[in-house]
Structure formats: structure tokens, C-alpha cells
Image (tube, rainbow, N blue to C red; front, side, top):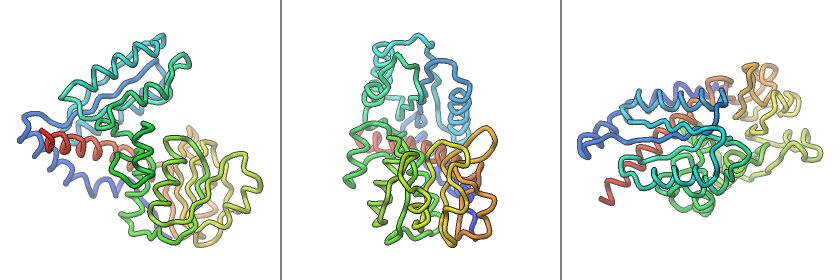
Length: 280
């Protein structure tokens, strides 16, 4: 049984990230920069944004925190995104999800310049990734792929079951696995006979957003379990404790997928800065 420790995997690449950031800073006269946009005052969203800003600081990168009121309109948010798109010091833009209900979130996501879409949220970025073209992958599923690679978990030929269909997690996760020659089944909370389908999986990715929704008895012995959920009870989307001695590998909650999401966001911001320098 292998613990897929996201904290350790992120630490292993941190030195090379810092070295590349220093090289960009020396050559360009300024460090790579990530702008985070927070609309409203959701405490969880504010915490996530602060974690990302701290990660920038740890790696020698610059960050901007743009805070907009709950009453912000779609047009006002689009104007802010447009300003950041045209700011050469900003290499990555992150719009924290969710935004208040009066805002057209999809329209605002898609307004982000694809070269600065380091969180992988635009329709264009998703399409390019799905077709195997160069694009920044959605940060959480891309982080999961990097975690699997870090621990040399083979993907090709495996039956992967992704439970969840969100546009920033479940759907891109399925496409990334398919691009790596897994056979992929996408399920969700309304899938009929979900336990039977999950039981066929060699690799389970839980991204349904419900605490311990996936029960231990659904998962076969020797499977690989990736739990992308996190809830205030400090549990994920999988009933993990009874599984630990039965599975081949699993991600702990917390400490599995989460650190790799932030690490991927930082890495992709660095890559955006390197690409920008290459075009200059």
C-alpha cells in the first residue's frame, strides 16, 4: 500500500521551481506574477486565495490580491480581467470560484487570456487540452496527473472511474486520463448502480463534493484511490479508513491532492512567465 503524499511531492519540485523563478527574475527584471480575484467575502474562498498568495511568496513570485465587493456586476468583473490581461507584469490570472450569483461566471472565466489561464478554466483551454494541444490544465486534475507520475503509477490500460463531472475537475480529469490511454468511465451522484461501476475501477478519482459519498465496500482490493474532496470534518469524498489496508495506493485527506493543486498553479504561472519571455 502506497501513500500518495502530495506535500512530499510538492516539496520535491520546490527547489527547481525556485531556481527557475530566480532565473526569470534575473533575466526579466521582475518575478513571475499571479493575480488572484476574489469577489465577495466567502471565508473558504478567502482562505484558498491566501494559501495561493503564500505559495507565491515561498517561491519568490509576486502576487496581487484583487478584492471586489459582493455587489460586483459581470461587466465590472470583465473590466478587471481585461485590465489584468493587458498588464505585462501579470503572467497568471486566477478567478476564485464561486462568484456571486448575479455574475455570469462562465463568461468571466472565458475572458481570461488563454496565455494567462494558469488555473485551466477557459473553454478554449479545456478544448486544447482535450485535443492534446498545448494548454494549461485545470489545476486540480493536472496536479493529480503530476502526483501519479511522481509516484510512477502506470495509467495506460487501466479502467479509471471518475466520480464527478464539474467543468474544472471531473471533466478535465477524464480527458487527461483518456489522453494517457486509460479507459475512462465518468459517473456522478445520479448514476444508476454507481457502487457496481466503481467496483470495476482500477483507478478511482472521487470528485463529487460530498463527504464520504463513496463507500469503502464499493472499491475493489488493489485499486488506486484518488480523493479530490475536502470537507470541514477533515474527510474527503471517500470513506477512506476501512480501505487503507486493501488498496494499492491512496491519497490522504488532507495532504494528498490539495498541495499538488497549489503547486501546479505555481508551476503553471512560472511556465506562463517563461513562455512570455520566449515571445519577447
